[in-house]
Image (cartoon, rainbow, N blue to C red; front, side):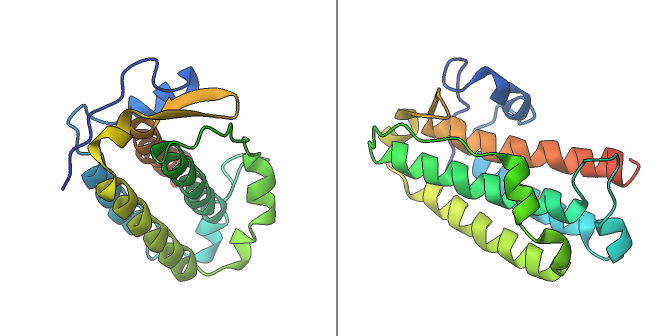
Length: 175
């Protein structure tokens, strides 16, 4: 699978370092995206609905809401990557993740439906990054008031997912 070099400091907003730092510096971000999808499915497969609806603290998302949040975030960051890769200089807005989660209806969905959507979005994301011309990865744009390169957005998607899978393991499923 295609290798995409890890972004350097300055190619992404400072907050994204917590996600990007979760990934090895091996250029295999697309392979990590494929492996993360399998890990997510294995993590939640067979869990009873009461576990999938568990909140580890008041006001925190359920496992279902977290998975749909990961999918929503991936769609948004992949769209940003496409626009930046194509040279679109339009400054893009941010999004309010809590509003998205509240409106998602995730808790009313079956886990099979959520995982099917997750897999479809992931396949599209991997295809997007796999098909970009090499020069596109260092193109950048501004979203939510901060600049990022296309390759930084790929790493954000993978690291953001790992961050949430770790939270599910550690806080919702007890480690």
